[in-house]
Image 1 (cartoon, rainbow, N blue to C red):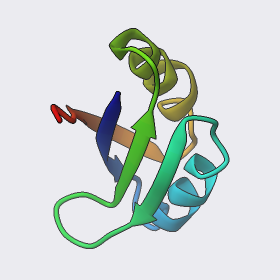
Image 2 (cartoon, helix red, strand yellow):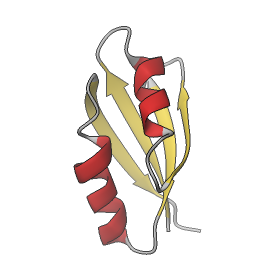
Image 3 (tube, rainbow, N blue to C red):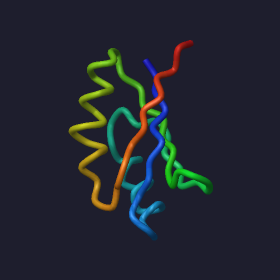
Image 4 (tube, rainbow, N blue to C red):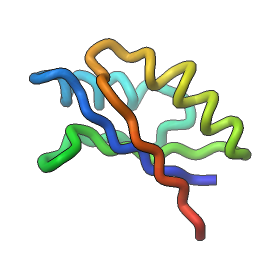
Length: 75
């Protein structure tokens, strides 16, 4: 399964959060972006539960990360 994670960070933390995310197993890409969100990431795992665990246990614990929105890919 693949999911896109849209992330809001604390001011000035987008690049730092994207760099930290790139170190996490299961995160295939993480980029600081412009617009409504500060970072967008692509994650992959075998199941939806594994994606959920990755987000809650690894991604949401990154310092400077404020909020995540998860969009599961359907094809």
